[in-house]
Amino acid sequence: MGLLSNRVDRSSLKPGDHIYSWHTAYVYAHHGIYVGDDKVIHFTRRGQEVGTGTMLDVLLVSSAPAKSHLTCPTCAPLEESHGVVSSCLDCFLAGGNLYRFEYAVSPALFIMKARGGTCTLAISDADADVIHRANYVLDNGFGFYNVFNNNCEDFAIYCKTGLLVLNQSTMGQSGQAVSIIGGSLSAVMSTPLRFVTANVYGMVAMAIGVYCASRYAADIGMRRDVAKIPVEDLTTRLAIGMLQVLEPPGVPDLMCQVG
Image 1 (cartoon, one colour):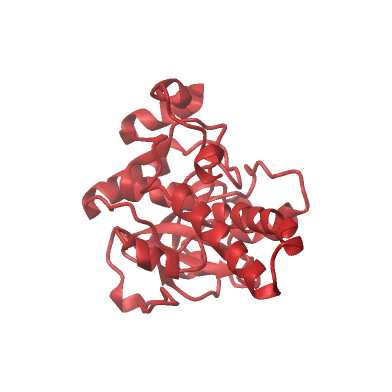
Image 2 (cartoon, rainbow, N blue to C red):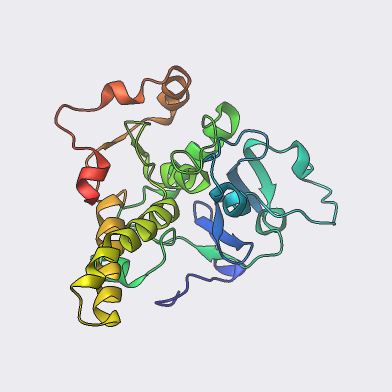
């Protein structure tokens, strides 16, 4: 994998890999866990999504696999797919290119990967643990899909690390969701500086700095409002909304960390 792209060949895949594919003009990527035998376990929004209630929903609909005119002999029709599902690799990619999400990257590489949702500072668990989590959640669910708090990237990161944000009212661990918020925030924060900045280059540098800082602070490998949740306990806690009860005292709100 290169500095700017995580694109890989199918022949390099191994069970336990966190993979993704961009859909609809690279606005949003769909993530999943490759479990071997040409199968991917992934979290879809079809039939279960909880949108933002804004125009972002029009853009973020690309988080669902794209429709195909071809009928797959092994996978359920997309119209019947919802929640955590198992698909063949072709159906998961839906005609897109294959990329592998990177774990335990250095801070320098993380910042250089300007786009969120491609890598993390967090360390991945053993492949056997990743596959076990993915299969367990396939049978027991991962809660309701939410673009910002509980999406396909959140699912894949949980399978890889066992880490979950404790307070469900804050941003999830999804890097691409943080990028959307961080990019908007940096633009807003840098706007007043046009009155004191000598030229446009200074404004751009400030906006990029705010964006990178927000991404770094919100990465799952840096946050303090996360905990390792056994997969056997996950679905019960999601069902009764008890994740936030486990939050230790004194954990700062994410927006305070980002700001």
